[in-house]
Amino acid sequence: MTGGWRHWSGYMARYRGHGPRVGGVVVAALVQSVLVAPFVWLVRELFDRVLPRGQVSELALYGAGLLAVQWSGGALAVWVRKQTLTITKEVITGLRLELLERIYDLPRAFHSGVEQGRLHASLVQETERLDVMSNALVAQLLPAAMGGLVLGLALAAIEWRLALAMACAAPFLVAVNRAMKPRLEERFRKFRQSFEGFSQGMLFVLGHVDLSRMQSAVELEKEKQTRNLEKLKEASTRLAWLDTGYGQAQTAIATTASVLVLLGGGWLVARGQMTLGALLSFYVTAGLLHQHLRTVLTAVPQVLAAGESMKALAALLDETSREPYQGSERGPVPESYRLESVTFGYQPERALLKDVNMRLERGRTVALLGPNGCGKSTLAYLLAGFYRPLEGRLLAGELPYDQAEIAWLRSSMAVVWQDPQLFHGTIRENITYGRPEAHQMEIEAAARRATAHEFIASLPLGYDTVVGEQGVLLSGGQRQKIAITRALLRNPRLLILDEPTNHLDGRAIEQLMKELEERKADRATVIISHDPDVARHADESWVLDDGRLTRWERLAQ
Image (cartoon, rainbow, N blue to C red; front, side, top):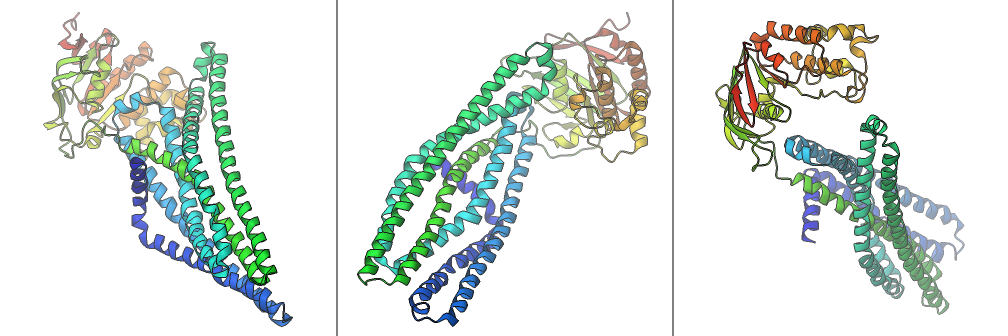
């Protein structure tokens, strides 16, 4: 319970910056509620004084008064709704931006270990649920609660005995709410889990269509996703039925109270203890109160669902892991990058790199050789600042990574990973990602150095050709060349090419290495490969084996 209140108080704190506008909404809602009093008074006067005396001339006047009160309340309701939408959308947008910042602040280790489908579903679904709840809370629940209070006082003023009879329904409503709350929370939790499973499954299907076909796993995948859909159907159906039962129980109690009021009021009128106008005004007021109570009680499931959403989002915002480097210093553009006595392992008890020392200097190309899985790509991740060593340190020039602002440091680097990372969009958009202001001449110059311009120019739409999700409409070599073009367009001081020859033929490799050789004075270059033949293009070559780095002595052979 304490944790739930903490989540609620943390969320409501986001509205503090909108205090004056929230106050205006509360005042407007209060005025809207108070307008019920003259409406009820006009109804009573109409039936007790105007109609019995046959004052037809005043009938239109009272009718106009009723409409004026109703229209005034409607105008206030529209204003409250508009202000509520503005405030809540700003709060939700701020929350989503904070979550976006948090996503980028979390380390690579977090993203590698989390199920992206579930995380995506959580972020989208939970914030949307909070958005819906926030609008209901301020635009509907708040005015309904305040209006209900005014209506309750009005009922007591009209006839306290009938008001007391109606109040007897309150304990039953409270009991229903207490009995249903834990079950509703559990159903919401199961629905959320099943929805996340469904979302994750659909992301897998969309991203692995070819794999499923080639592995003859289409039917198996259909069965798997059918199970996810069945779980979602069952969870949503059970939630809907419970919500329906909750609503019907409330309606039954309120209807019973209304019938008792009608009978009791009729008895009072028959005994001359209550006028017909008073009974009608009481009944109209009771009907309005019933509407307000339904609004309040209908919002309960939304509030419970929002509470679950707050817990899920708070878990992400409270995640203690951060990017491994949190420095803030910026030095001169690095002329070199160094690893000093670096030991690292994804699991501390299993070191993948052991006491590694390496210096990468501007104007020199270094080849890093070794078998697959020996830790070559891991060394690239360390240079990019995605992980920090268990022992030792890294430096950019004379500035330790621990002190450097990591975004500034990465701006001097470019990495082409072993599996080129392309997104659905045009070739131009993929190349200029991170540098959208680049001119066509710059783009083409980088593409020529990456040996990509020739094949791009041969396409019907050239640089405006759509590559498909993950570049699926291009060959492996073409994807590699576009990724290298994107890296070269940054004019980095440190260029890391992780297995750049995997998807290239011999001619393309020779041409690429020649282009890199001609411009190597601008940068330090690291070529990671399991192919010893790339060593002849480097100024120095190192072998990584069993976690240790040794100079390659076969360069002259």
